[in-house]
Amino acid sequence: MQTPRPDNADPPSLPAEIMLVVDSGYSQTTVMPLYNGRPLHSAVRRLEIGGKLLTNYLARLISLRHFDMRNDTYIVNEMKEQACYVSLDFEGDLEKTWKGTRGEKREAFLTGGGIAKDYVLPDFHTRSRGVVRDYDPAAHTKARKLAAQSADANEDILTLRNERFTVPEVLFNPSDIGSTQPGIADIIMQSLNEIPIGLWPGLLANVVVVGGNACIDGFIQRLEKELVKRVPDDCIVRVACPPDPITSTWMGAASFARQPDFASLCVTKQEYEENGAYWVSQKLGS
Figure 1 (cartoon, one colour):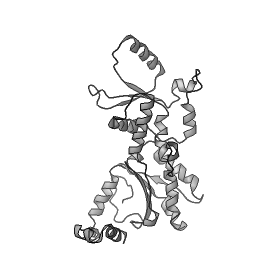
Figure 2 (cartoon, rainbow, N blue to C red; figure 1 turned 180 degrees about the horizontal axis):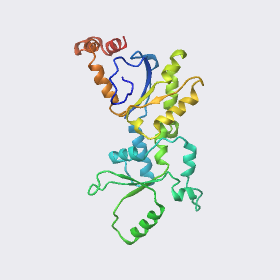
Figure 3 (tube, rainbow, N blue to C red; figure 1 turned 30 degrees about the vertical axis):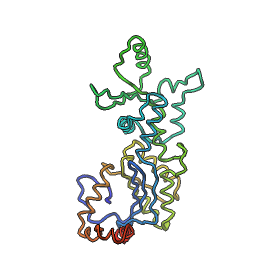
Figure 4 (tube, rainbow, N blue to C red; figure 1 turned 90 degrees about the vertical axis):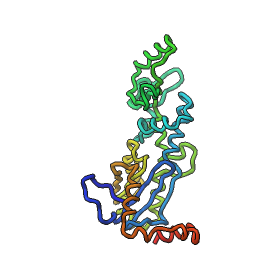
């Protein structure tokens, strides 16, 4: 694992002395404290929520409110990556996207409240990818009139409102979808509680987030905000993200494979057959 650095910086000869890695990827989110480049195994925690679950949740919401897109996972995943964000004020954003009572739509809902976006679905003739546009109430009124006059529609458009931020919110509050798992900030605290409190300042000042979910707008800021609320006041919280969090884990593994003692840490097929998975943990944990 490497600490994020500018592209023009020299590669570090040694890993950071102490850091807390949060890897939030496709299938799960893993929290791993490192000390002198080695994981503190007893403090490793995992959350069974990742990008796949978020994509499936968004597909379910869209299928309920717009079109059935449960079989269009690739398109929905692109939609998530382009349009979703992690809210820094969840209740405030929820209020802005509330439709209002029946028969009386709120002004913020009609105007989009600065949150609503139009997503133009790909037609695979003129567009192979979807496009995010600013929500325009006047354009929607005109489109409804044109649709009533013609059976041919030039574009298929979804209006995304609270879907934009309620989907990534699951990473921080899994109870929103009925899960009993703790959120990311809570599993980080579970991990820290397994470590002497004297190491907390170093870990919290060097939190590094990798994985595809780190690319979601607002993720880093929200995680830092949630941690600040949970840790002692004298702990400084700094959350960083490498330039390309999706490939940074692979780059770290490639760097590890170039180390001179890499061969001594490898487990051969014969060793695995003789000793099983226990032998892997013995070698890598030593």
